[in-house]
Amino acid sequence: MPYDQSLDVATFKETKEFGDSRITVGVFSYNGGAKKLQISRETQNQNEEWRFAKLGRMTKEEAKEIIPIMARAIETM
Image (cartoon, rainbow, N blue to C red; front, side, top):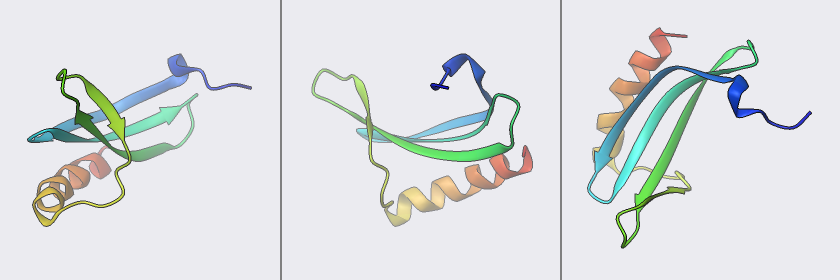
């Protein structure tokens, strides 16, 4: 069965911007399944449009800002 976006429910979602990139922390449940934590990064291109980018690593500044958001997200799980 292919992925159906309408079955993917976000119960928590918070975004923090860092200049030309932003990191989003969310809690999602697909088709009534277990709630799962998702962390994603987007970068802004020259046209100021946001595009998905590999998160991979975070700077110390990013981590300090994202960890408290992750803690709040975990409380909703």
